[in-house]
Image (cartoon, rainbow, N blue to C red; front, side, top):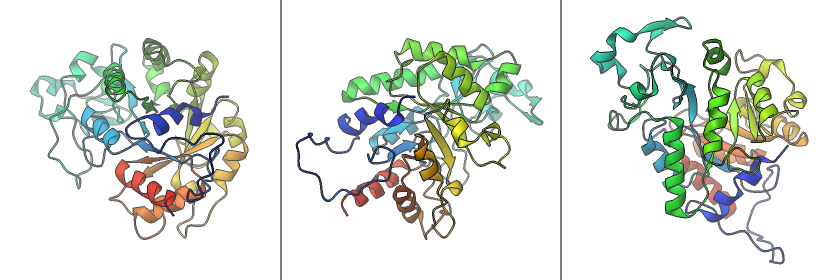
Length: 340
């Protein structure tokens, strides 16, 4: 399997939001740099969770733009299928939480009950209908002033934005899409795999060395994808007892048979006292990178007194990437550690 870190080396070295230029082979070692415990010894990646979602509505172009300006190495779109088979950039399959649909009278009669919830659902709308909606901040205690300004994006919209930003900055921008609910969508006749492959092909990203990692909580989906594509994969995982997030009961060794990395919930890595559980070391021993989720400035940290303590503990543990709602903080703490 190909290493995830190789795919995001270019953003770290070449973009406006990158770290310093890599030393030549014969250059003297940088004695101020920490000995990172990542799988390849490189600094951990800052992954913008749904963009800079702590400051702008999640999955909006503004959230992604701000994340890049703040120095994120990777940006993350979640993907759901529309009724006409188009990949839509949304985290939730229902729409009332993250869009203005409740205020759209033309869609008032489109509510339906799916998965035990009555709401408006992405898979029951066409892509054109969904693109008329605007994004909203999903957390009540965050800034609501940007609601209603930015349209819902398709995956093609997102990739076009990335292409334009790469041309503007003359850099490579890494992405880490998460395919949501592929089994449920497939049962509705909306298998996301062909659409995902087609989108990657259209942007020359369906290759082993593309700056892309595809993630999912659905192990069979990743196994299917692994059989038809060389693009690197990450298995999202919250523990053996986490319903819907337990990798279908697969062991780390079994996951390493089809994935390049594991997207681990942070409580798997550290105790509240900050002690290591050994999870990162176990994953690294199997050649799996560890991208941990999710660090939020405005939420209680896993360990320590604030988010900076939490980030320092995760970086010291050797995580290869951190999903952050506030990328600037994650970048700043990493930079501080480099200077110590």
